Length: 256
Image (cartoon, rainbow, N blue to C red; front, side):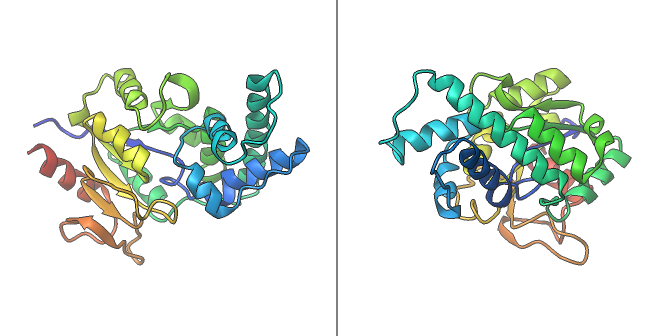
């Protein structure tokens, strides 16, 4: 059996609840700045999350929900400009402390580091968004805690394609049997399962009803010693919050 050597984290919805009060708000601010009358409600944004990637999400919105919008001739540049403005607004929100890490995330990361576990990130969000989240929650030095940060357009196909996980594992020279993934959504679990990664899922308000077939366990959060998680499916083997012992137990159960 391969030993567990690395934890690979998704970002949005997994490390922090960034979608509803972070990315959605930043998109709307970018639209306002551009003089557009678009407004993505919390409900609409939940539907737009069917598509991963910010630029892709804007295109999807225009194709399905705002078909009367007349696209400018330089449509690609138009979308890229909106997305760049959105990223700027998102970074500002992060700098103001608007979006904390989810319960149990910092504790697990610190425990993994103390144990010499290798860490990585596999996400569809932009590198700038990852940097902002880490800097304003764990501190600027935390960027160096992650051996590989696979983010944004670094691979041609975003989740649910497995490309980003393949990229990260190749860079780390690891096999799926040596890693554990952390996800929060249908697109995320499809990506990790296709990569043959044992995966812990923590759901959020947007993803609680998603199909998480293939996950090692599905929880409402990672939990803290004084604030236990709720198991939605799977066996926590007596644990009440996610720690390295629990992660290793799930890994052994999958690869024993």
